[in-house]
Image 1 (cartoon, helix red, strand yellow):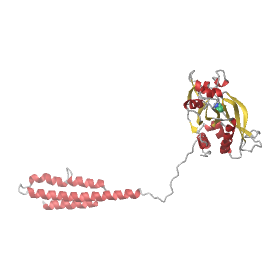
Image 2 (cartoon, helix red, strand yellow; image 1 turned 90 degrees about the horizontal axis):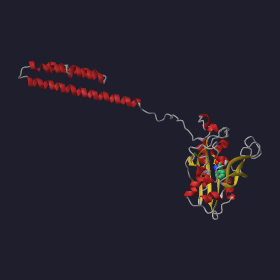
Image 3 (tube, protein in one colour; image 1 turned 120 degrees about the vertical axis):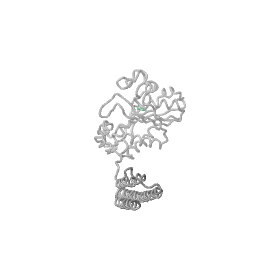
Image 4 (cartoon, helix red, strand yellow; image 1 turned 135 degrees about the vertical axis):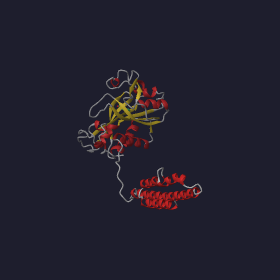
Length: 341
Ligand code: PHE
């Protein structure tokens, strides 16, 4: 019996040594220690052993079993360590390899120009106010001294949601909210989307405006002109200047259309300025006393100016874009070209 066990043990050790994978080891374990294994068979045969010999034989079997198990465990550990080492080797990273370059996006041109404008205004001490895109008829028109029969109130220009609510047609609606909430001195700009039923190469039903409002003691058209001079120099270059032309807005009196000297030809006349040397950039004016009074501001003490810039228009002029649709089609070939921060 002892010899038999010795044989089983030697055979097991040889088989374990030969095994080169965890699966193979498992097979060996089954063949020897498993239910139908060699050593298990010996245990099952104990009933044929003389009762007085059983303790001794039992002890031999147990010794054999634990010896085999110890060797088996050691081999498993060794194989696992080797597998881990191999895995580490395979996953090794060469930190000296050049990194893969990710695709870098840039901000949309309208966002870029909005940011440039807000930065300029913030540097001049303006606060930012963002109004709502859905407005009431009162804030968008009535409070801005736009009488019921004014062409700007025509259904064709305005997207009405109900007789009372509409999609704001101008960021000027924000002026009223600001003046209702705040006492002068007021110095705010209000960027945001506006909506008009208008659609051609230079107009889109949705576009972006930036409204400016200054209300303080002794504010005149000269303050507006002085501020605009600074503004256009920062946007279009140091050599540019402005000129004011008379215009009409219900909420400003006097009202002006602001032109910038052509930054492409320097004023000599070219295709961009259509030979005039000047390019129209925004509408502005001295805030109509009716508007100030409607917001409870004493016009004996205070006056103000306001202006409204079309952001897409500035972007088109700055980046030489000839169709406003290019700004809304999200064509990467177009957008990629404009990275002006
Ligand atoms: N709200 C006017 C427009 O949309 C622009 C403007 C703003 C004019 C402020 C004067 C003062 O055309």
